Length: 467
Ligand code: 6PG
Image (cartoon, rainbow, N blue to C red; front, side):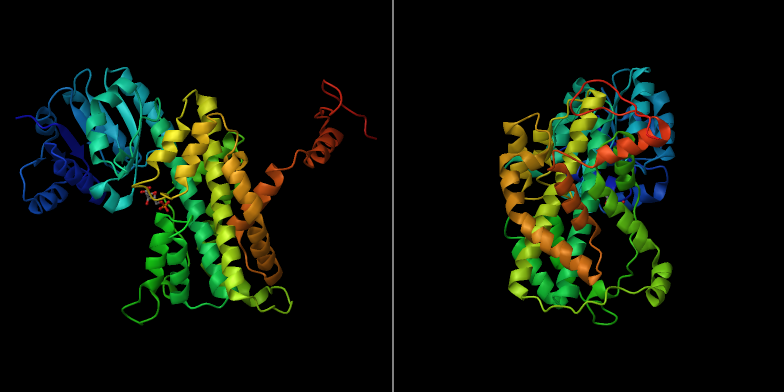
C-alpha cells in the first residue's frame, strides 16, 4: 500500500504535523536527514499509519502519485538542499510543500525553478507553534490553485477548526502564502509588545502585584480583547520559579530574541512604501531590549523626568489601559492588513482579506475574537482602504482614543516608554488628518535640491527659486 503523504524534517514541528496527519487517517511516510530523529518519533508510535524511511529514494517511492511531500525543515539553505535531493526521484505533477517560515522571495524562486521541471511547489504558512502543529494549526497555502486542490483535503483536515470551519484557505499564487505568514508574524510582534506595555503600566504605574495583573488579563480575556496572546500572558504571570519561588517572569532576562520574520515584514513594508510603523517599533523594542549591558550602564548616567507622580485611581486606569490595548491592537492589525492589501495590489495576488481574517481565528498565535469583526469589515467592503475607517472600528477608536491618549501621556510625563502604544496613537492621529506637514518637507527638498513640488490648487510640477 502506498503512503498518501510524506513529511521530511522530524524536529518537533515536523513530527507533530506528521502525527496530526496520521491521527486524521492519512498514511504518512516520514524521513529525516539524520536517523536519530526518525528513530525517536518511531519509538513514540503505537499505530501503523506513520512509516519511517531511512533512504530518500525509498521514502519517495513509497508515496502514491502525484507524490505529496511536506517539508518542515529550517528555512534557508536546508530547504534548497532537501529539494535537490528529492528531485531525481520525483515525476511531473508531484507536489512539494514547504511548511516552514521561508522568506516568500525564496519561495517564489523555488516555485519558478520547480515549475520549469514540472513539479508543483506550494509555500505554506503554518502558525500555531508545537501544539498547533499537533492539534490543528492555521494554514496559509500559496502556489498554483490546481496543486493546492490536490492537497486541500489533507490540509483542511489537519487545520484548526472554528465552528467547524477549517482554518485553512487558498491564499494566492507563488509566494503569497509565505508572505501572509510573514506579516502574521509581524502583527504577532506588535501584539506581543502592546501586551508587554499594558503589563508595564499595570506594574509600574498602578503598582499592582503580578497575580493581580494575571487576574486583569483573565478578565480582559473574557471580553472583546479575548485572544490567545492575552490568555497565555495570564498563565505566564501565574507561573512561579522553582528555584526562587518568585514569579517566573521576574527572573527571566529582559532581552528579546527574534528569528527574522518580523524584521522581514518591516523590510518589505519599507521597500514598498507601506506604513508598518507599529510592527517596526515592536521590532526595534526587541533590538533595544537586547542592549541589556548598555541599558544597565545608561541607567547610572541618564535620568527621567522630575515630576511628582500623581496617584492614579486603580479601576479607572485599568479601563483606560484596556481601551489603549484594544485600540493599539486595532491599529497594529490595521497596518498588517494594509500591508496585505497594498502588497496584493503590487504583486497581483488578489489576497482574500476576509478569508485570511477567518483562518486567523483559530490555531495561529494571533488568533483573537475581533478577527470576526475584521472579516466582516472586509466582507462588507472588499476594497476597504484601512480597517480604521470601517464603521465598527471607526466607532470603537473614536471612543477608545481617550484611554490610549491618557496612557501614552502618563508614560511620557513619567518617563516610561510605550513604543507600540504611542506609535499606534501617532499612526491614528496622522492617518485621520486630511492635511499633513509634508508641504514643509517638499519645500525643503525643492529648496536644497530642486526636487520640485506639486500644488494644492494647480495641476503640474513646480520649482521655486528660493533665494
Ligand atoms: C507561529 C509563530 C512561529 C514562531 C515565530 C517566533 O505563528 O507559530 O509565529 O512561527 O514561534 O516565528 O518568532 P520569533 O522567534 O522571531 O519571535
